[in-house]
Structure formats: C-alpha cells, structure tokens
Length: 617
Image 1 (spheres, rainbow, N blue to C red):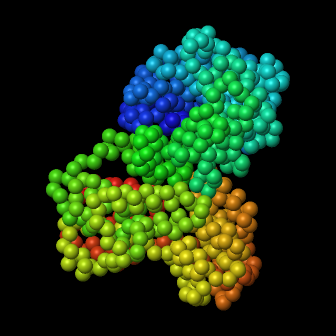
Image 2: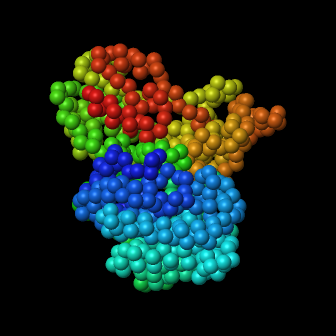
Image 3: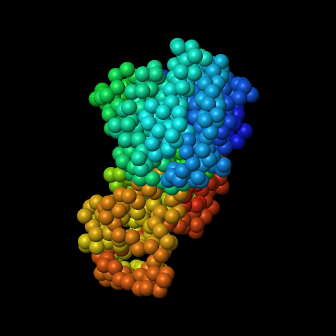
C-alpha cells in the first residue's frame, strides 16, 4: 500500500484510524507503507509525529494495526522543509514554484540535528514494532530538497556537487544502520523527475537511485515532483494523475531506473488501479513492485479480490481523497467508498422488519441505495424510465478520458445483476403507480434536469444540454460548437467534441474556466488538454443572444462579439424538479428523496446519501 496521509492536529494516531488500517492489512496488502510521520521538530504540518519519545504509543498503535493480518509494515519518515506552511526552513533560502513562502536557510548545526532526528525516528519505529522504515525524499520535500540542484544552492559540506547534495540521505542511512542494525530494512522514496528549472532529470535520477542502492536500501520507490501548493505545476509525470491522465504515469520513470540499477528492487506507483495492468508492469520489467494507493481507499480488499478474480470497487481517480487531506487539511474521504474511516460501520445490519422498497431512478444514488437495502434483506424493486441503468453516469462516462467513471458504472450494473434487486426498465413512475404498487418504502432518486437559459434564442432547435451532447454526439450538428459554461461538465464536453473534430469555444461568465473546481491536480490536467485540443475560451463573458449560426456575447469590459455556432451546448448546471419529487413522496407514507433530486452535487454526495438512507430503512 502506498503511503497515504491523514490529518492529525495533535500529531497522534487517533483510535478511529485503527479499523481503517486493519481493513487494508486484512485485505491482503503485502507491504504496508505508512503515511508520512514527522521525523524532526522542524515542521508545522499536521502530520503524525515520530520525532520524540512521547509519540511511542501512537507508533505502536499504528504498527499493531497495519501488521495485524500478516502485512509487513514500514514507517515513512518525512519533513516538508521549504514546502511547509508558516515559518519554514530549507537547504537554501530561495524562491521556488514549490514554496509558498521564502524559507530560512538551515545552519550546518541544524542539518546535523535533523540527520539525528531521522535516525532516532527510525529507532522509535523499530522499537514500536515496525518491520522497517521508508525515508521520504520525494515530492520536493526536505530530503528531496537537499538532493535537488534546484533547491540546494549551498556551498558547504551539504551542498554544491552531487556527493555533497547526497550527504543528508546517505548520513541518515548510515546512522540508521549503526543505531538499528544492518538487518533493519530501509526503503527510499524519491522524485525521479522534478518539473522545475535545474530539477532532477532522468540522468540525475539514476545517479541518485544508484547511490542509495549502494547504501543498501531495500527498494527504490519512484515518485515525482509536480503538485501544489502554491500552484499546480504541469508535468509529463503527474504524481496524482486524475481520470483525465493515462494510468500508471510513472512507469516510464521506474523503467528508466530498472534498466540502469540492478542492486535494488524498483517500486512503481501513481494511478495504478487495475490488477492486470499492475501485473503487466512487472511482467514487462518496468518495475519489481507496485504501490497501490487510492485504489485501496476505494476497496480495502483490492489485493485479495485481485488474487481471487473477484469484482473490485473501482477507484475513479477523482482525487477527492488527496484534496481533502493535503489541500484543505480535513479528514480523508473517498467518492466511491462511503465507509472510508468508517470501516466498523461497513458490515450491514440485517433489517429487523423486511419491507417492500420501491427505488425510483438508477443513477449512482438509486443503484447503491437499492443494493444496500437489498443486502439488508428488503425486497427491492428499482425503476428506471430509460432503457438502461446509470442515470447521469452514462453521459458522464462517455468521453474516452472518463473510462474510470465508466468502470464505476459497469461495477454498479454488475452488482445489481448479481443481487436480488428486481429491475424494471422503460418504466416511468407516477404518483398513481406508487399508490398502486403500495410499497412499504419509497426512495426517490430521479436526479435533476439540465438548466436552460432564458435568453433570446435559448429554445432554438440547435441548442441542447451537455447531457444530450454527451449521450448522442451525432445530434451536435455542424463544424462550429459553442459550449456555454466553463465548469467541469462544460470543459469535459468541449474537450470531447473537439476530439470528435468540432471547432469548439467555451463561453464562461466568470473570470476563468474551472474556477469552481478546487482540485488543482484535476483542473490543471484538464486545462492543458483543452489548450492542446485546442479549445478556445471566452471568459468574463455573458451570452446575450443565440442566433441561427452564431451567438452574441458581451465581455464585462463592455466589448461585444459574435462567435460562430452551428450548435450550442448548455453546461450551466442542473436543477431538480421539486414539484415532481413532492408529488411522488406524497404518494407513499414512508418516503425518502436522495441524490441530485434533493441537491445537485458530485458522485461523492450521491453515494453518501444512498448509504445513509438505505441503512435507515
């Protein structure tokens, strides 16, 4: 399991995390690499601590949980250095795209103190029961800053040429061997690429990897430096690739090391979610080991299910988990797994009274609610007015770059097929039908409808919603298309239509596209794909009129323009039909409404809503 961080205001491992850790060990993880533990007092981030003896009970708790079902467990040691918040220290006091503030420069005495801090953190890990440690030198954090010529501008014993830049990690390694014994294993995680001026490149990565292999690290965990704060940096090797990026994005980096280094196993990570693809990476000698991160948040049984050939709840690489912890410093969350850090709640309690349950609508909320209610012993019938299950997951998974969402749709459909849920397609549910069926419980999950624009020409035949355009691209006539709305849906639709050969422009009333998308790992990649397509953007612009083959817009500075538009696609949000929802719920004495028909939101909220209500029935 790849190291995935948590939020620890008191630097202690909370009891609520223990079931989460045990579940991944039970799920078949071979080597459990912990989240990063703060290894020195020089740091302000809310990481779990390992730099003082007062953290021993916390370390012991973590080690016991991760090793409980047979996994080996390594504690990852780290510090953010100049990438920290508040007052920071780094090898050199420089400005960098990776730094929020200009850090202070470490003195030689402070560096010697830090080296001993890491050594003593390893000693505590050993005494706490960990099988080994991982030294974190990736993502341009503290140890990585010493190794990188971009960050390390010193001209003393700890900077200058390659040997001196490598002195910090090598002295940490040697100190650990002296303190913990030569048999205590140490892995090494580092950036084999830095998207920075004078950063680590392919050649330097091999030199770094070989040096640490010669220092007897037990593996080289390949990563990269590309992400925020303070701003997302575009890179050919994203560390947290979103659904818009190819999977297994760092395999080229691990393959480069594998070709040149023979005395240490190479571990590949980043966006590995499919067991077959993981096997292929090893079979093709691009890596010796794989680290699975987000996919193990989505399904803690990933290794066992992969081994047994069972269906895995798919990670959709939405990066909600990473954003929650790293960007906003909140508890971790997973879009597809409502039980993340609620593992004790996952075993379903059988319903005391078995009921007839009528679920109307088969988007993610409707399908999951039907599944959970059925697994609790209720007799569930799922109604869908279209000819297939999926709701907005269908258009939302149409573009090839949304294949991870398509995997989620396929997963839900397969789970429904293998369940006791009765499915009725092509069946529009009315209040009269609800009263006729006389179900004990009604769950309304009919979703929401695309919002229309009330402007001249807004009801023209060549105006359609993004949902319609994604569902049937053949309806998007002509060469010139204008997408109104520059949020996620508008940008994804524009990119999709551009790839189909259309000349596409986005009109957005805000000052930039994707302003509402706060997950920069995602929006940075999507923005780059739009620029390469290319898709034109007109921001700070209001659509005033839709004409037969053009639209008229007004910029906030007062300038007006016309854009060619054989087709106009609206991506300006969704609105639930509250009247219909109310009519349906009034037709059954015990009724609930969930998902977009309550409040249009993400899959995350729909899944959470469905789980909550299905447990109440």
